[in-house]
Amino acid sequence: MLTLREDFGQRRGFGREREERAHVGDGEPKPLPLGNKCNYLCPYFRCNKRALMIQTKYMKGNPQKVGFCRWVGDTCITGECQYAYCEKRALLPGNKCAFAINRNNGSEDVEKELRQEDLYEDDKVKEIISKKFGKRDLDLI
Image (cartoon, rainbow, N blue to C red; front, side):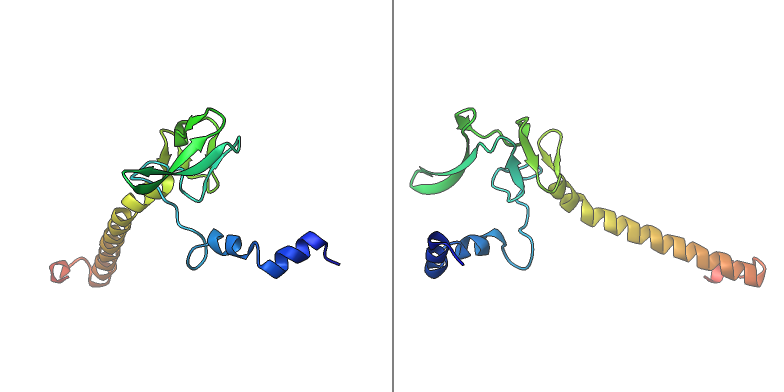
């Protein structure tokens, strides 16, 4: 049996939009680093003191989201705070985000690995053929 409060919430549809907002797109929300730095607007950024409050401030007529720390009473300093952490454990020392570093270096690493694998396979093929032909006709390959 539902209590009066739960029944009221279900009939009105409260809570559904919160669940829909929690996940963007297909699956997990995407991290939002600023360059290589961690960002308090990232869905994985958390404050251990639960003091982070996102406020909308209007600067020259444009709304901007600003992190406000209720513990200190000032703007959030993100990863430099001792109470800040990342749910995905991607917050590195120096306020750097592991997701941003992997995204920047990831494409280069993959290309390097592919080149090394191709060179390794070529060397392996040459070695096998040279064994078969007795180390002659190696320049044909």
